Amino acid sequence: SMPAYACQRPSPLTHHNTLLSEALETLAEAAGFEANEGRLLSFSRAASVLKSLPCPVASLSQLHGLPYFGEHSTRVIQELLEHGTCEEVKQVRCSERYQTMKLFTQVFGVGVKTANRWYQEGLRTLDELREQPQRLTQQQKAGLQYYQDLSTPVRRADAEALQQLIEAAVRQTLPGATVTLTGGFRRGKLQGHDVDFLITHPEEGQEVGLLPKVMSCLQSQGLVLYHQYHRSHLADSAHNLRQRSSTMDVFERSFCILGLPQPQQAALAGALPPCPTWKAVRVDLVVTPSSQFPFALLGWTGSQFFERELRRFSRQEKGLWLNSHGLFDPEQKRVFHATSEEDVFRLLGLKYLPPEQRNA
Ligand code: UTP
Ligand code: MN
Image 1 (tube, rainbow, N blue to C red):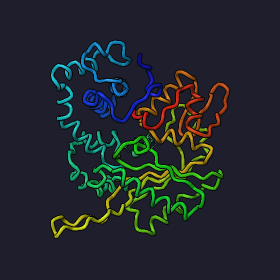
Image 2: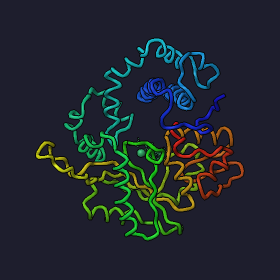
Image 3: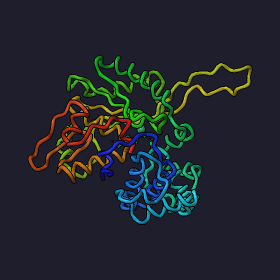
Image 4: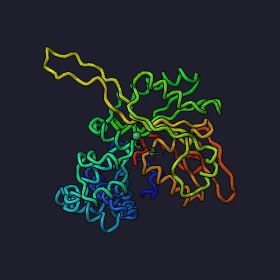
């Protein structure tokens, strides 16, 4: 039997039903483009169930009793099992609507709302966006400027090289501060769309104001192509934690694009074209006070769907509100203390799942 919430079961990075889960995820993504939250959730939940199965689905009967397999998801799987493809999924993937929304939302700084507005106005290509710079935010301009690099997956080696650079800058700014790689790379992914780091210091309070100094250090090395700094709103975070709808965190952070120096290949007697000396990479730097670190680590490790499920489980099954700052009991009006991710799982009555099993 399969538990209903993704946070109650392991979801490994590679599983036995990739073709099937990807088909449902395409339909989920397309539903998201239409702002159809209900449909997005149904397909995401069904796709996620497939990721936790111990073997490939070979016949429809194997779906019986699995949570979240409604009529529509079942029909998609049936078609895939019988014909190897699904007409609806194929049509979505080929459609101008899906392809354009995918293209636009891939630009740094562009969400579904903006992409949809542009689509409704008849815009279809990145060049058409570039022709209207007055309508673009600074972030979107940078996203378009570095689009080619940013749409190329970041490799693990790049993430590790970035960690070295950022650790050096942090060490120089505040001895004792630590840098932790989070996001997809912490879950074991071999590539990602960006690199996420959490910065903290064991002595709470030392981390305040750290990020602008780290950014200047990176800037003085010529590594920063774009950055957008957000000061901490932690003064409001107790309040934030009590807002059940609020999933946005209020840590001090920097959304940046760094120019990562690329190792130079030895040119084989001119056989290779000269390779570029740097590659633009999206990097998120987030600073957390040490008392909130376990919650921030859990919140930033993802996957996004796993986080969503974890919060839904906390709320619906435990009556507790979870976010990247902490865990709150709205009845007793108290916050919980945790020193590790294991603590947070324990507080929620969940079996601990290591990051590699959170690829829901
Ligand atoms: P990402 O969007 O970076 O995803 O968010 P990822 O899993 O690393 O995969 P890539 O980068 O596409 O390869 C990482 C985690 O950080 C949380 C998300 O919920 C996700 O769980 N996050 C992201 C936040 O909490 N706040 C944000 O503003 C952004
Ligand atoms: Mn990421």
